[in-house]
Length: 314
Length: 314
Image (cartoon, rainbow over all chains, first blue to last red; front, side, top):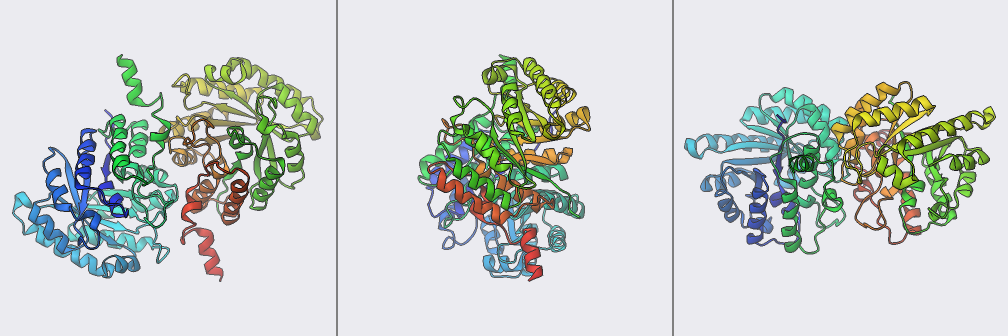
């Protein structure tokens, strides 16, 4: 029996929202379907933010409706506030990821509120969730952006992250996501913070959202694994980053994450060869956008477990 | 007091030997000097292989002679056999890295010998070293290539790696380097093998040589750190890889490794900002060669320890 590790695809939200290119709804649906067929069962499919702010995700409702038809898919949608949550209630989505920044400066830049005001907003969201009929009551995760540092404020004190995480859990978040939004994290900080926050908010699970901005994405995953985390956000082709800094990378690469976890002996439920095929959809629909991914370039090695068992079975 | 971690630059050997481009001796010396000035004190400066096989390193003697003039620099040279060692004795080099492949197929492809024959050759090299006058007696490390898998043979059994490592240590190697030559390693395998080999060959130190072929290079460093390793090979700009596969990456990137170690609280003795400046020498002298490196692209973050202390001092 291999231990499970969960990979959550966030490219359809975090990846696309950072691009100036628009992906047609049909292509998003093709991407969603292909990842589902490869075995991915956790996908953040879009974001309920005002379409004038993120025109790339203006088709959120259509994408959500399609995803709701995929059996066994745990879809979620990002929300920045109660207004976003209302769109989720209207569609009957089963999970929403409420995002706030631990750094006050970053939160104000993002949603024009202090972090404390966002925590208060989370309380309203949870209260409204609880007012829904039981069969339409979504789970709410709380994503703590800039948990490892902030491009505006620099260091973000660990005690502040722990306090906000605890407040979010006490507010009723069913999951805490520690997000290294700008790639300021390092494995020592990751291991320490995950251990502490996990102890603080238990039994609420703590998940990891890492960017590969400074090349430490997968090392940070390893540190979070060591601390006991078992769920990780990632983006196909490492899509994301900043449209104005072509060389900056976005989220950690889903394919490379799956490769690392499976090579280490974890079970992700994802077929890596099929997942690599999904890259073609992005290549065809996002011409000119750099697609990251080391395994896609170098190929799956001969000692990869799935290859070994295929040879053993032959 | 921060704990020390040693970064050894191998780009002048492993990086350059994989390129079809030739770097002029003057540029190599400029590179060497600039890294030395940035605080790098361990550099593998070249390889004593026949110049007809590696014309890129035909100037080994000139580069070694220059490096020998840099006070406090621990320079080393790769050798594949006794003939290479003789070139080292002639120059009075203080350290040589004898390389053999744990995979028999890879060793035969590389040096037309079985692995066992290479271990026997190592014994001759050590015997010849011991016959040198005490002040000209070089240290000999043994690099175990394909220690985590082989592109020819696939899996390389852990027991075989342990046996060869022990034979090399018993032969008199003063250091064992476990090398993931083709990027087949993963953090679970790295941690397990380092722990075991370190226990087997103690007190002989065990160092790590990782390639970033499949994106796991720095995660593998973290796993080796966890096992207790404190010395790591890396290549400026991640130079290396295969000249016939433009997208394949080479060694882990020195700059990113230094960033990770320092961010985690280790002391490398290397000034990251100055190290990043050295990239310009490679950019100027290797036009068209892709230069890797996440920190170089994204910049040093505001929460980096050296930046914090600079601000505190201001």
